[in-house]
Image (cartoon, rainbow, N blue to C red; front, side, top):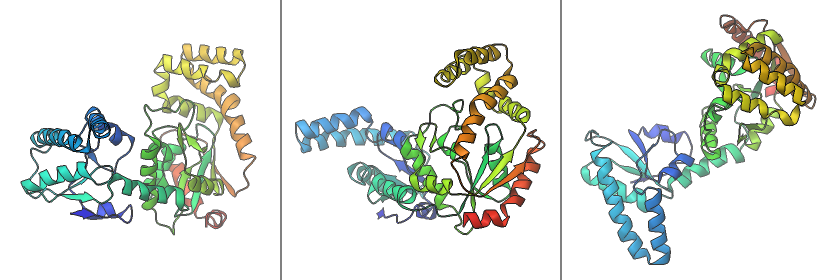
Length: 355
């Protein structure tokens, strides 16, 4: 039986025991349904082989070869990851368009006695819902930006706001990037996978309550923010954290320990700033990094690289701004800052601007 999804939230209501993506690993890596596992019935090389036979020889030969490969891979999955599934197991199986790959695998699973369902339209139907959510519709809740110059602990404070019941969307978490030249956290998701995660976060919002989002540029690392969300962010009122430079530098030295503990990575990132600063600045920063003076390095980067760019960006904005003093970013002080942010969210200047 095939189910048809009409909304992003409908998937969770079906309460499938597992969601199985039977596409090739490269397709799965590019994007997939939330929580899906990849049990490919044709791997990338096999899929390419079947496609070549289909085009160059005949559809019949392609189906014959593909059928044998699907059966072999299905047997491997049955003897491996599916070996301990109980009799009442109820999975959802999907492929690219809800066609032969998912249908073939579902038939095999159904013959065993499991309550298998497939997704009408396959992955493409899911992607269509994601595109509608992030590209074709406005942000479903009023936006308030958590603003503040580099090193004001915005991402950590977002997490503390969430613990206090505030609606938040952590764009940097979804994008697996801290949003700065030093912010890489390994490999980012694909643009499609990022948009799928964002679509689910938007779908979960209560439309009558504001959602707090960290102030970002139009890109987080290599990933682009969808236009409707970016427009909402540009027009949103802001909570602006006011933090002394020394506190920010100390916080950055703590928060970016993964960067400072990798001298080669830190040196390479500083080199990437050469188009924007005189050679003597880069040389000094490299020297500070070399002797482990990370707080001094952070303070100079704040004052000479980040803050001037923030000031230039803010000069173009004309939205309500409420300053929130945060004299300390010590771990013990962050909870107090979060409490002040919660109190500030109820100010009329913010709620009117966010409506």
